[in-house]
Length: 539
Image (cartoon, rainbow, N blue to C red; front, side):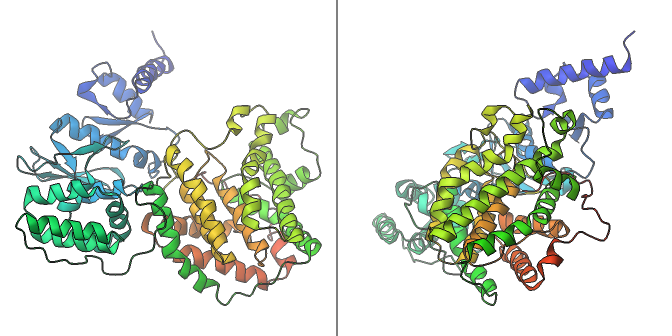
């Protein structure tokens, strides 16, 4: 007779077979091989969670009940699978969400509206406060042209969604509206307007096109509609002037979004730096001594933010060269030691770059552009030396999707990462204010999330390289501010609100500049800097 462990192993084998087919959510009736016995066994062992009756999601058994990360990563896949199972091809998401996705907005929408012919105006409650509303539409009202998102959602084409969306969209989502208006094909837009006889909406579209810099296209739209017998009164639907987006109209929406965020956020950051004094970094030796003196505290706080359990003794051991994964099995197996060793080696590299920039009056961004990729390699080389990572893991930008624990913001796709990283360095090079370069450089880097791991540490190295070469002191983001730090990044990423993040970073710059170095680098009263165990998932 099989033991309980053998029975669970058999159920896990069945689940693995389904996962190997690329299935991420399961409708029980569609997979008879996943029998009731298998399902009950997997649910009890926390390898499977019920979403709604009859639908299940594979689960990491170590995740707590309040951990939303896995659900957020799979919510849209569930909605798409559920809608397809129930409505076949006769469904699509509402025009608002269609335009958000077309504009490069990646954050999770906790409430999704589905338009379907056979819907019943039902609100379906989902885990973690999410929901989907099934809105019934009349035959003939589904979009003529549609696309499918990477998660399976059926999106209305840009032109048809612009015609269908209400004027409030331009007030609440001006950035998304600006991006899709820059990329919409004028012929498709005019065809959608003529097909529906939309004279009022034509006035809104002509005003919107003119507002985003397409004056010639706005004139052509008006002329065409008037030739077809419509009266068009132009109206600008945007409440406020739009942020300037440089570059081609047909650039990647992700690139356009990053450029627009930078343009709209920079003045807020400039204002926050207005009363923070800065000097001219000319004494290279003094600057490097100051940065080196902060190293142990900086390493402790930065690694602790990431969830590593590190102590001052471990950091000092590594700095003294007593870490040897080839001869000491304990060092070879200790993840904390590898993380701290990588941090120490990268810190050296960053210090060397800062010294070169200041001593030779180099352009900081040009120097960063040449050296930055090696920071990632240096950060994770100890893991390769210890045999935990393969050498090819150091190749470069990630090739798969990642998600941030407890965050609605979803980092960019691997393809978009490769489009946006050059844009980040272009924005850094064009920016004159060193404080803006540091704060927005940090934020945009985390927003893109180019690597599978290490993004938080690298973003803080980037920030401090730009602060110190710009005349400010090396500033430690403390583990005590971790919650505020992550929440501020989420506000900026998902809601476009940079103020909390700018306030936090500038507040730390001010506070640490006003304190004696001994105060910043001293250990807590406990005598040890061992961080409390926390789940990883910092940016």
